[in-house]
Length: 155
Image (cartoon, rainbow, N blue to C red; front, side, top):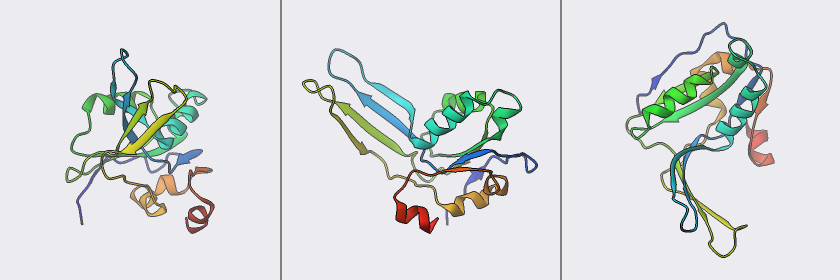
């Protein structure tokens, strides 16, 4: 079993919204001459947390947005600073034995509507058991799930 460093959340914090969507660091390749972008926050977890945060003013309401970010050994420290600046209840877990989940997004030079995607590192999908790392998230008033109906039932 891998040891993880977990930044604790306030156990008394009320959570209105918790996402089990994934956090992904994206590489985005555009057709020339537009340069590629690297280490772009991505994944349904990041974007749902951001959406909830936009309608939840800091510092009180923003803390009611809960989510989990799994950082690997390659996680850029400036992104931790960015995530912390949102003032949400983000459970930051660090596992130095693995890489952060990363994806490649490529856009076609001839068909601008076509986007290709693939994972460039092993993906780490959140499961209901991940909420046990922070029971405050387990007691959220609502949950965001992005999955098939059968997986939703199993959760």
